[in-house]
Image (cartoon, rainbow, N blue to C red):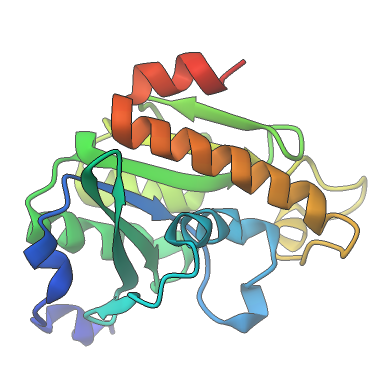
Length: 204
């Protein structure tokens, strides 16, 4: 299983760009999951890419592109390993580009935040989020920043897994697009000024 993880493929233009930081949005690949709550992280990095056509495949692990934020090259990534195995994509990517956990911002959905709210953290545990736990396990470190995008709790009687894998309704999408816009500003602030500045500005 996952024998393709051993393949060595040159990351090409991304390596040449020498990114100083990485912003990774967690989610699940494929159109089936594109508008689900669990893919809030994917939507955020897509927003930062601003419909860039520079997306490339890193091995078979992730879609990646590089953007400039405040004069710095920043790597954007969407793991293809599915949510619960996100760390399997992030670990070799950071190693290839010689980035440390402190250079990483992981963006993910959060059931414990009200829908549309965002929150930055400098590190810590996974809070029960299996994608974040996979990153912790693979990196052997909790010292990476997180940007949580609130999706709210499921309605009474609905399983949490079913809820996060359920697409946003058409009525909800404009509301969450505003949240992604705010989260994109917070991510840019992190890239430019660091986690403390971003927390002070956007955790209100």
